[in-house]
Length: 396
Image 1 (cartoon, rainbow, N blue to C red):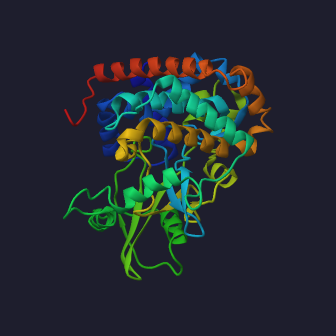
Image 2: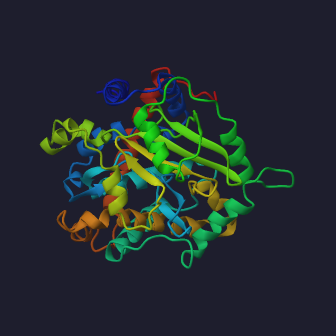
């Protein structure tokens, strides 16, 4: 099946699960024509078809509760109940029971494209990149531990604090990250039409109590979830400053949709409209964000200037140490994947034992290199076909 037909069928299914913003769907079609990396990020439904087909042996690995739509820009910061900065996976929209190898191969595949397309490309040999991911994952399985940027992880804390303190401004007279956040969210356009009652209830629950009066505005964000409605609640002045909350709908993982015919359990979950967002977040080894909430079929969260993605381009702060920092970041990502997987890894049949078997006790990354190479090739072919369908990047 072609990428165009798969996309049309997936979007028809999505319309059966939730109301979509049709103009954003059109915008998404154009944006993913801008490069292989954004294409990968936005087409997990296609990945979910291709990974079991082209990586059949890896797909026989033990199942865990995984992220699904994982990539190098799916990691960011939040504030925990103590006000400390936490770091880790920040999007569980596609969470599902799937082979643990999926998350590792998808992360490695995204690292390949990030090396080529990022504004600040990964400065690291690709085999070393895969090795860092696997090393981190093995360490994380053996000793899961939350990423709290207080006493530990000074190198990562420095990247985050620099982003908060002086990186965004880059010069006198420039807006810093807090100014930019206020200007962005205080000037959004109001949502047209009615707000679903359950979406408003989710926003209310995520607000300080009693919930202050707020305006509901429209924000276009992300790639994978672009087209699903978002409702952004803004209070321009609450006890001296702006506060922002956002709600978006939850639908079953595209993995279930793509694999319902080959696995009865996936078909049953899909029929029941089961989502795994809440399970994945609450079971992961982390110091949780208390303002990330699931309410009925909506997920609501706090948006703030100190809650942002830690991206590859942030590593450009120390060019002479970029290779070392890249390895550290990829290893940390591997550890964080283990933080997500570890609660279900033993029950799933022994992930650590399986990984040791295919990696020669961690001494070889050939399985990861081969899996990623296969998925890179499939993604590149789909991307070329997508461009040949006439989709043009809005940047020209």
